[in-house]
Every structure is written in structure tokens, then in C-alpha cells.
Image (cartoon, rainbow over all chains, first blue to last red; front, side):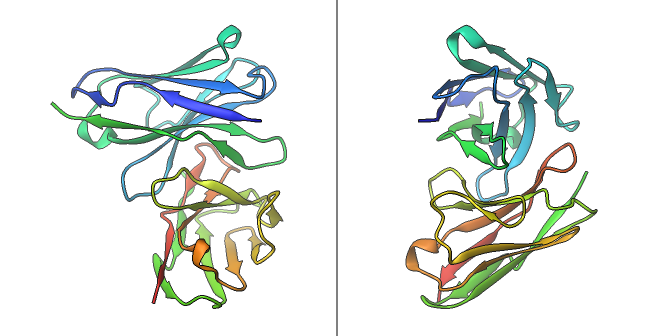
Length: 116
Length: 107
């Protein structure tokens, strides 16, 4: 059974760095790509970036200067780091698995609030 | 970036209604469009991939259609459990982009 679970701090100070972990089970990170998607409350989701199955990365150009995605395949984990957080970075952050035939499987999400 | 414009933004419907919602891409995305359903407090769930392919376990009252720039999600016989926000996603161009959503509410 495919599972993805996000974890990280619920509260981040403005200008600080956000660090999130996505722990996966039921599939291999060397066979499937994993994307991070975020969603401000009451708004549509935003694709942030991807860890390809082969270890390469791709980023949304709007976030590229602040965002880094990495992984530890031995621990079945994908990591997101984003610096210089502001209040409009508040929202729910999801990790997703990209299915071969199309579509995304989603984790439960983790709420991140940027506030002092 | 490819802008995905969903319409309407909200709909007031009754159980049993036929519901049609639209998603328009700012450029040709082929059939590289998914539809997701998001209920309050939950993560989005895949309904349709590749514009018209129903995901495993999705009731056949959900139908996706379209190609190029215009896409449609139809619910043929609205059920109470279908109350949710529906999002389209294009994955033809980077960055992938979502629409702003269509919210279904009861009359």
C-alpha cells in the first residue's frame, strides 16, 4: 500500500528556513518521482518541485532561488528546504507520488504557519 | 507559465443534478490534464488522469473530456458525497499548474 507522510515544524518564524520530511512506504524512491505541492488556505494548490526517480531535481521557477529538494533512499525519505519564509508561505504542504500512467498520490499534508 | 482557469468558481446544486465544470488552459496542453476532488480537511484525491481516464475505484458518474485548451469534468448524477472542491492540473509544461477550483455546494 502506497503511503506518503509529511512531517516538520508547524510554526516557522519569518525569514527563517522551513525543513520538511516526506517518509514513503509501499514503493521505491528509485522507481518513482516525488513532487512537493503546497496549498494556501482556501486557494488552489501550487506545484513546488520534484525529486526525479534518478535523483535529479526540478523546481518551480517562482521558488527556485529559495528551494532545495533532496532525498535519502536508504531511509525512504524526501526532504524539502525553503529559506527566507514569509507570511504568504503559510499553507498546507504535501508530498505526492507521480504515477506512471498519470495522476498523483497524495500524503495527508502538514500545515505550516509563518508567524512571529 | 500555463494558466489553468476553472469555471464556475462555485455551483449550487441538488442531489441528482448533472454537473458540468470547465478548465481552460492558456496554451495547448494536449491531454495532459488531471482532475482532483478535495473534501474539507482532506488532501486532494485523483479522479481523472490524462483528461479522460477514470482512476481505479472512481464511480462512473464522473467523466472527464477535452484536449488542447478546453477540458470538462461532468458528474452525471450528483450525490451528497460529491460535495467538494474540484481542481484541474496540467502536467504538459513545467511548472505544473493547477486551476483555482470549482466548489460544489448544496442549494
